Structure formats: C-alpha cells, structure tokens
Length: 159
Image (tube, rainbow, N blue to C red):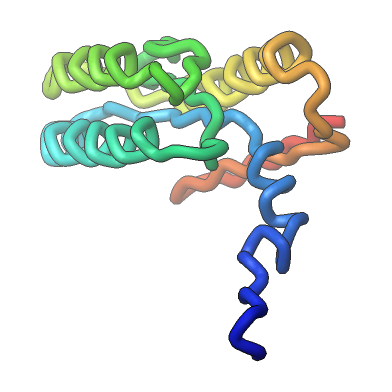
C-alpha cells in the first residue's frame, strides 16, 4: 500500500454488516424460576444480566440489541419488562433485574410446560405489536423463533 493511501475501514469493506446490525430484532428472554434450580441460579443470573446490559447500554453506535423484554415463568407467565430500548434504558433494566432477584426462590410451584409455551406466545404477540409500531420502516421480511429445553422444541415462523 502506498504511503499516501489509507486502508479501507471495516465499514467500507463490509457495508452490509453495518446495515444488518441496524436492523437487529428486539430480544425476549423467558426465565423459568421453578425450584430447586432458581435458588442456585438467581443471584448469578441477575448479576450476569446486569453486567451484560450495563455494557450493552453504554456502547456507542447502533445497538446489536435495540430493545429487550423479560418474561418470568412460575405457575403462569408474567411479563416483568415490556420492550425497552437499550439506549438510555439501563435504569429501567436494572430495576427489572432487581425485581427478578426478589422473586421467591422456594415454595410450592407446579411446573407447567404450558406456562413456558404461553410466555413464548405472549412474547411473539408483543414482538408483532412492537415491530408494527416501534420498528416501522425496518426491513423484517421474516423472523423465526426457536425455543429449546430438555423436553421440547418449539419453532415459530413470523411472516
């Protein structure tokens, strides 16, 4: 390369990568808090979520995760956090993670697989509403969601 010529930047080399990042879909996390596992993972999960989102909210440029929603499953599902934008949304995320950590760690819960499925379906409905309103103009031809657990796999295709 000649001394007067500069190297092309990553954006110049891969403009599609920048465009793809700006069209990232919102993310939904479904947390199953049935005992005995919740007692062992609660503190670590809440701390990890707070650390990851502290970093994600402070990054400059277009976000890899534009918005985030959190569902909790016990006997039934509950949306602890409807979609919130990461940019400027850390205080709201932080209070949600504190609420998640304060949920009962022990007790009598009847595990219901239907509650996880219902949380995913509610999340998909919220996603459709959000993408119809909050992401107008975004190019979302189709999206898919796959949920895996030890017992079942659910795949949805949104068109």
